Structures are given as C-alpha cells and as structure tokens.
Length: 269
Image (cartoon, helix red, strand yellow):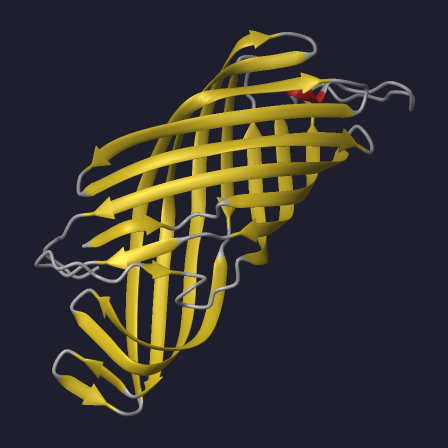
C-alpha cells in the first residue's frame, strides 16, 4: 500500500523551443506571419526549473502506517532543479487537438538524521546517513475540443489521461535496523509504482500580435480507478514569441498537484 503520494512537480518555470509546422506553409515575404493557433503540428523541447514539494508514505500490506517522507526535509532532496520536458501537439482539424507531454523529474538527496523511518514492512532507525534517489516522471495525453475557434482566439474543453512513474531508493548507512534485524553497515529499500491519472478542464489561446501568443489551461478531477484513489489539479499560463514562421520561444508557469492513495495488492509494489 502506497499512500499520500504526491509525485509531481509543484511548479515549473519553463523556457521552451517550439517548432510550428502549419499545414499551409508557403513562400511568403518576411512581413507576413502565419497564425500559429491552428498549426497542424507543434513540437516543444524545454529545460524546466522544477520546484518540487513532493512527499510519499509507503504503508504496510496489513494496513500499518508508514512515515510520511517529505522529500526536502527528510530526504534532503533539493527543492529546485533543472529538468527536461517534451511536448507534441497534433491538430487534425480546426476544432480537434491531441497533446502528448512528458516531464522528467529525477532527483537525489543526502541527509544525516537520528530518527525512525517506517517504509512498508521495513523499519529503519538509529543515526542514519540517508542517500536517496527519487524519480516521478509525468506522462500526459490530452484530447482538446475547441468550442470557439476564431481567427485570434481558440477556447475549448480538455480531457486528460496520464501516468506517474514513481521510483524511490533509500540507502541508509551506519547504525540501522530493519524489523528485528540490526546491522551496522547499510540497508537499501526500493519502491516502484506506476499510478494512472486523469483530468477534465478548459483551455484558451489568444493571438495578441503578429508574433505573440498567450494561453492558459486548467484541469482537475478526483476519482478511484481499480486500487488507486487519486486527485489531480493542473494549471498553466504561457506566452510564445515566434522568431520565424517555423521557430519560436515559449515561457510558461505550470502547477501540478497529484495525490494518489494506492490500496494493497497481492504482489509486491
């Protein structure tokens, strides 16, 4: 059982290089700018500054509560790091759009503490030097339908599906114990999980100049899927500036809050 799992980045400031490939690109003079609201393809590569406020708690299969692991305070994981992100948008029609995104989030921590940590069926205690590696990559897929598809703005609804790929490894050295077994060298605990997510919301994009665009997106949902209870809230605001009819720059602020409660299953996580 994995409970109170908040694996996603809490806020991201992103600078992205975007490729617009309109379906009707043709030879034009340098003063004519395409309307990128309706590009058929859009590819983005970003290096993002991730502000991570995640925590996780791994409960025992019998229902015993584990320790809530604050990634920053307990594991020593930095609250800010630079991570890559990828995005692909396909717009087959004026009103329909499919978006795929992948945010990488891999961090490590190093901290010395004197305390007891309960992780699943393992209890780690004593004067601990804890080295940790935590990843919670986030994959998203969205279907968007434009209710208002005008020349200078595009507003509609969005349905999102996704997954969080969570992987946590803790290596504790020095005076450590697990259950009734005490050791003096090291102890390693690893947990892996792939958690599904979903969301419903709305989006809007506006062309505010020949080269300038702004947009906003907000989605959220709470649901139970199989043994996963989850709640999701995602939102972002962004601005784009096109250097040419094919290449542009993007600056955005993204917020994601994902909570997943995973019930026990017959096999190990």
